[in-house]
Image 1 (cartoon, rainbow, N blue to C red):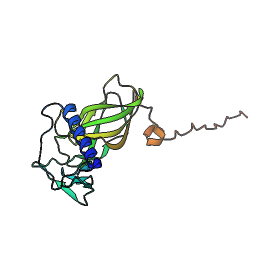
Image 2 (cartoon, rainbow, N blue to C red):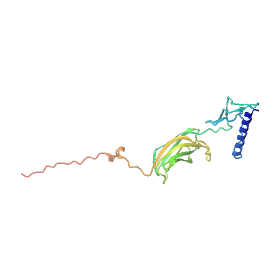
Image 3 (spheres, rainbow, N blue to C red):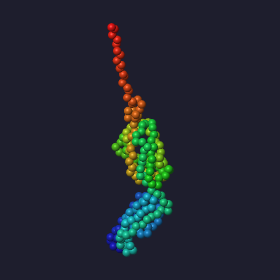
Length: 214
């Protein structure tokens, strides 16, 4: 065994020990063996729940290591497709306190039972905040309750999940803005073509001849 290969195996052994110490008991379970043993490889979760394994290093029987020119596709016994959010739409762009609005999500592998966590910005803070389980279902109506701060609220990320307590997925970038006001704006009757916008005829003044006695 060469000094270089021995050093590599020592690094791998230490890394496995670190994983064993860092994880709580029962959180990791073996799911199967790879066709080609490899280390330092990439594992990419695909949208259908499969995992693509590429690259890394393999150690042969003589202690030499090399980069395998192959890739593997791991298929779990139970496929859990990744839920992707492509778009969020509001049925209106501005609302008044005391009214309501509808939010509609679209994407891949979403169901009427899907929970949605949202990351948003608000007039109250320069930093974004997260609301867990903000909506369940693809289209839901939300009430604008009293006490909410007026201004623009922009949702900048959405995470979808089927289990209510599972918040481990990634946020997909979206952009949807809703402006909240506390009172209704004074309507522009002239622009709306309201009946009172019709021009009022000016008062006609009649000249009445005054008779001059002869």
